[in-house]
Image 1 (cartoon, helix red, strand yellow):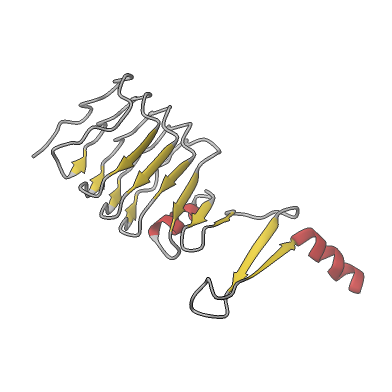
Image 2: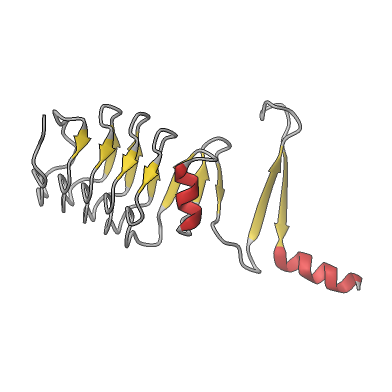
Length: 178
C-alpha cells in the first residue's frame, strides 16, 4: 500500500504523528508540519523517505525505534529547532543531507560503532553514546575538556575510571617540564 507524498504537508494543527497504513514514511509526508514537537517513529516503518519531515520547524525531539533501516536524503532537513534525535542500531543508511541546516543545538543519540556515530562524527554533530550514556564533542579545541572512559572488566558497572584532560593545561605542563 502506498500513500502519496505530502499527504499531511503544511498541516500546522497536527501535533502527533498519525499511524500510516504503509511500511515507509513517504517523501514530504509531514512537510512543514510545525505543530509536531516530540515524536516517536515506530518500528513498523522500514525507512523515512526524502524530505518526510522537511521544514518541521517546531520539531525538537525524535526517537526512531529499532527496525527502521534508512533515513533518506533531507528527511529532517531545515528542522531548525531539532535538539535530539535517537537513531537505533538497525539504521544502516543515513543519506548525506538528512539533517541539512539543522541549527546548532542538534545532538545525535545512538550506539558506538554504528552508522549514527559515523554520521555524527563526519558531520561535526555532537553524539550521545547510549552504550555508556556519554556525550562526546565532535571536535575539541585548546580550551575543551576531553573525557576518557576505560573499564577494567567486561561489565561497565563493575569498574570505570573517568579521566578529564584539559588540552591547554596538558600543553602548559609539557612546556614547563622542558
